[in-house]
Length: 208
Ligand SMILES: Cc1cc2nc3c(=O)[nH]c(=O)nc-3n(C[C@H](O)[C@H](O)[C@H](O)COP(=O)(O)O)c2cc1C
Image (cartoon, rainbow, N blue to C red; front, side, top):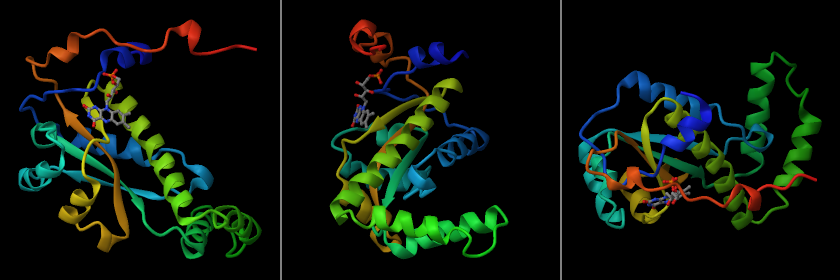
């Protein structure tokens, strides 16, 4: 599917069918999400893929009535790191050194620079920064899903603390940021025929 055709085809699905996505499709969506860019490459987030009906049912009371959390094929939960500190940044650049076959410490100067930039932020600012990064991954996920004609609904309307507790995220140094239900639109989902509403093109971008 051509990119603009795919982006016009997709919409935030209200109602999912019973269809289950294949492991292969899910693996490709996970990989597209993993390949997302992030500032300094730090990727201060993780992805939890919920397939289990039992877990989805446990999450439902915290989904603000959004039953698609239960009815979708797979629920992707994008979580952000609760601790972004010097050690996290050092570990990231040590990983880069290993992956790129650099000498240990070769990136020490840049690592120091990144630590100075990042750690000048308050904890709240760091969490906000991490949530900005994870939304880039959400965008990649949504675009990839559209290109593969996999239906999706991104969701911020859920009780994060409830999700964190059900999924044991705090113990893993993570907290939920945004979720995305994936599957196939139900034939009864009338939202699929609603006109897509965006800012008019002539009021959106400006060429100077
Ligand atoms: C970060 C984010 C959070 C969203 N949260 C919800 C949500 O909780 N429930 C929902 O039904 N749609 C949610 N949406 C979907 C938007 O309402 C939808 O994308 C927007 O109205 C544009 O419509 P379209 O995606 O169908 O083209 C969310 C979208 C984004 C990007």
